[in-house]
Amino acid sequence: MADIVSTFRGRGMWRYRALLPVEARWGSRLVVGGTPMVDCGDDAGVYLWVKDEARNPSGSLKDRATEMVLAVAKRAGCTHTVGASTGNAGASLACIAAAQGMSATVVVPASTPFVKLAQIRAYGARVCEVDGTYDDAFEIAERMADDASVCCRNTGVNPFTREGKKTCAFEIAEAFDWCVPDWVIVPTGDGNILSGIAAGFLDLYTLGITSAVPRLLAAQADSSNSITRDWRDDDEATALPQSPTLVNPQTVADSLSVSRPRDHFAALHALRATRGACVSLDDASILAASQTLAQRFGLWFEPSTAAGYAALRECIATGRIQPGARVVLLGTGTGLKAPQRFDSVAPEPPPDYANVVPSRVPEDRRHFRGEGQT
Ligand SMILES: *Cc1c(COP(=O)(O)O)cnc(C)c1O
Image (tube, rainbow, N blue to C red; front, side):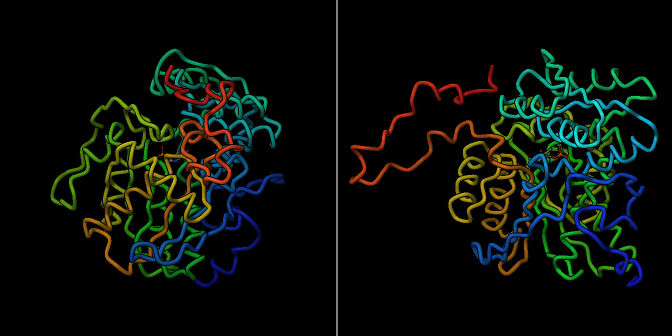
C-alpha cells in the first residue's frame, strides 16, 4: 500500500484525499487538520501525547467534519446549511461556511454557553435558540433542511461528519510512522468522534498501511453516560443494543451533554471493533483534570476534553491501562471556549503581592459564573 501513502501530500486533512469520499473542489482558505501532536512524555507511568485539535480554525475537532460535509454539499449545489449544536458544531459550521461563502443557520438549546453563541454570531451565522434541549434543536434543524438546496450537518444523520473525523486517526497513525499507539482516548457525547476515529484506524488496517488498531477509550460525563451504560464490557456474545438508554445530562462538560447519543450504535460498534473501554466521570474530577492539563503541560482545553484526561487517570489507577502504554488523548476543544468556572480557580497570590493583587473577582466579571445554567 506504499502507493497510497505516497499520494499523501499537502497540508491539513485533504492530504488524505485518496482515502476520502470526495476531493474538495475548493481552495480552502482555512487549513483544517494538520494539528500538532504534543509530546507530554511520561505521565503517571504511561507515555502521553495530546493531539491538539484546538488549533483547528474554529477551535475544535468539529472542523474536520464540517469541512468534509460542506465540500460534499457544495458539489451537490447546496447554498445554505443548517445544523443543531451544543455549541462547537455550530461555531464550526458558521466558521467554515463563512470561509466558503455559504450561509448557515445554527439551532442551539437554551443552555448553550455564551462564549460559543458569541462565536457563532461573530462568523455571521443565523442563530436559532430553542427553548428546549439539544434533542429538540436536532429535530428542528432537520425540519429546516427539507429543501434540496439546504445541507443539514446534524451529527450522526449526515454520514460525512464521520468521514471527516477519520482524518484525525490518519494523522495520529502517520505521526507514529504508521505504527499506532496502544490507546486513543476519545471524549464522547454523541459518539461521532469515537466512530470516526475507529473507522479511520480500521481503514488503515484493512489497507495494510498499519498492522494494528489502537484500543479506544471513550470518556463520558456521569450524567451524560448513555454509551457507558449500554456498553457491555468485552462481551462479544451479546448483541449490541439498538436503541440508547435515555439520560438526563447536567454536566460542566457541555460538549458531551446529550440525552440520546446520535451515533449510539456506531459508537458501541467502534468500541467492540477496537476492544475498547468506556468510563464516565463526575464534574469535580473533570474540572480537576482540566486544571492539571493546563498547569502541567500548558494545554488549556474545555472540560469535555478534560474528561478524557480524567478517564486516563482512572484507567491507570484501575490497571485497565498498563504502565508503559503509549496513549494519545484527543484535545477536542480549546479552553477559551469554556472560561466559566475558571475565573476563580487561580492559586492564592504569594504573600509579597497580597496587597497589590486583588484576590476577589470583580463584580463585572461575575456573569461568567453559572452561565449556561439558566
Ligand atoms: C463534540 C465534541 C465532543 C464529543 O463528540 P461526539 O461526536 O458528540 O461524541 C467532545 N469534545 C468536544 C470539544 C466537542 O466539541
